[in-house]
Length: 493
Image (cartoon, rainbow, N blue to C red; front, side, top):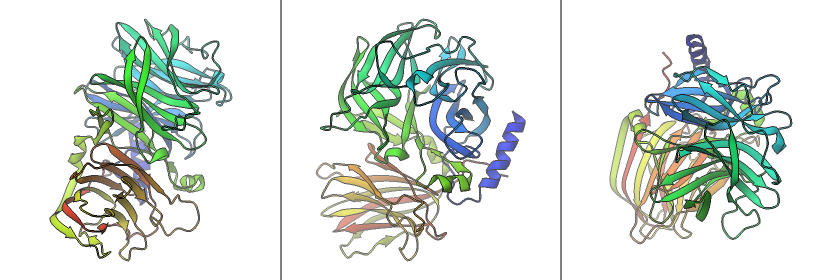
C-alpha cells in the first residue's frame, strides 16, 4: 500500500501544474473517473470508491478506485479495490454498486459486466468481501449472486445495486428500465446477501409523460432514503441526451414506492451525475455526484485526466417535499484569506461591483436583496477586461437561477462547452437571494437558498481570469458578501 500511495503522490505532483485541475475537489491521481459508488463510513473513516479506468482518460475497463478520509475533505489514495477478472462474470467491467456492513464484514455488491455491456442480460449483480481496513477484497466464488433480470420483464438495463437492512432482512433495488414504459427500480430480498428473491418493481416511471419532469427509459444508480416521515427515491435518468439526476419524494409501504413529487437534484445536468448518498454516524445524509467534463474527449486525453467528484452535500427534506441541500460544514476547514463587504447599494448603471479578492480556488457567500431588479448575480473567473467571465445569475422576472458560460473561454476550437444552464428558484416576497459559490479551477458549484444547485465546468483560456464581480440590471442591495481563498486538499511537499 505504501508503494501505491507514493506512486499516486508522484503522479499528483506531476498533474499539479494543470491550471484546470481542481485543488479541493477529489480527482483520481490520473486518468478516468465517473460514478461515486460504495461510499461508506467504517471505523470512523469515510471510504470513497469510484468508477475508474486506470489506463486512460476515457470511459473503458471499469475498476473501483478507492480513497479514504478522516474528515470528508482531505483524501488519501488507496489501492484499487476491484478489477475485472479474466473469464469471470465481471471480465468486461466492475460497474457501480454499494458497500454494506455484512454482519461485521465489509461487503460490496456491484455490477459485473461480461460481453456487450449494452445488453441487459450481460449485466449482473456480484459480491465481494473485504478485510477490516477495506484494502483487500475477495470476490464471492459463486458470483454472480443475481445472474439475470427477472423472468417476464423486457428490461432496457439492469445495473447498480443498492442494498439496505429492513426487519432483519436485506433489501436491494437494481436500476433498470421496462421497454416502452420507462425507468424502473427493481426490488429484491435476501437473508444472507447471497440468495436473492425478486419481489416486484419498487417504482416505475413513464417515459412518455411530458407534463412533469421527464424521467427517461432507464434509471441508473437508484437509492431509497428515509428522510423524516417521507422516503426519497434518487435516480439518474439515462438516455442519449439529456442526462441528469432526479429525486422523487413520497411514501414507501408494502414494498412499493409511491412518488408524490419529482425534481432535478442539480440543474447542471450531466455535470452532477450518478448521485450517491450515505447515512453517517451523525445520522447525516451525505451526497456526492460525478462531475463530467465540459470539453472534448481529445482534450481530456491530452490532459491525462477526466472527471471530478462533487463536494459532499448534506441533504434533508423540507416541508414542501423538496430537498434542502447544503455543502458539508467540514469544508469550512479549507478557508484561508478572507474579505467581507456589507451594505452596498448596487445602482442601475450597468457597472459591476469589482471585488478585491481574486483566485482560482474560492468560496463566495453572498446575500442580495433583489429589490426591483430584473437580474442580479455574481461573475466569476473574470478577466480584468471582462472578455472572459462566467455568470451566476438570478433572473427575477422569470424566477430562474442559472450559470451562463457563453463567455467562459476565448478558446475557439469548439472543444469546450459554452452554454446556459438554469432552473426554477422562486423567492417569496421579501426573501433574500442567498448564494454560496465554490470556484475550483474548472469547477463551479452553486448553492442557492439551501435547495437549488447548479454545477458546471469552465475552462478559461487566460491565466488572469481570476476576478469576482457583483452585477445587477435594476437596483438591488448587496447586504453582504464574503470571499475566502480555499487551500488544496493534497499535501504535495
